[in-house]
Length: 311
Image (tube, rainbow, N blue to C red; front, side, top):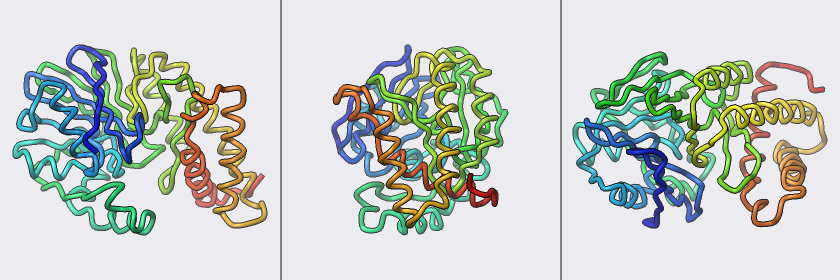
């Protein structure tokens, strides 16, 4: 997976497309130049290691220049490569939420859960998830101000998508890295989509996290899936409206006939058709049905945990 592309976001800040599973605009990593070496936000999975190194090279840096790895959360598409980087480059500090930190030190439970989901595709999709030594972690609770060379960043706990989720604001540049809590978007004029897979979806926490991010008044949101959002307020408003819409539709579907897999399939078919109605084919192709289907599962789990009767 060595093919990569680099997009300059601001002076000293770039997006690297990791071409995960051979797809463009699927998983991004962000490289940031500081006076204390290179900082990385979400290095991606180990299966994209070659693409990551290519992005670093095009950025004008070497692996030995890496100093800081900041994780929005520990899901494999965001954090899988962190342990390998620490092994390759001694001296790297990995920043992670306090709930996710134990799973970086010992990822065995995380990987066992992932293997149950992905089976034989595990290696090709994600690769290794090596442990990070505890002494290389900077464990965050949210609310910390970080000094990365000359850059001053604010770290915030932003649950809703995952209980171990963080977002980061560069207070000077006015850009915010929001992982998955601010959903997905494309660079092709398609709708903002919630990313709501199991197991940690929590609607009240999600609303609070979006309020916090909106209060930053950032000039741009930098999404892992995928790229820069130039109008954060409009994006966040559209995203939350869709979260609420999907949540109610999923709750209403829990008593429908069939299995959960069949309910999720029907939901994905209906919502994909609704979202792409009127879009030209070249735009519709960027609305990912898999995101819609996995969100049914995450929202269904949320409602069942609340013991809320279906509508």
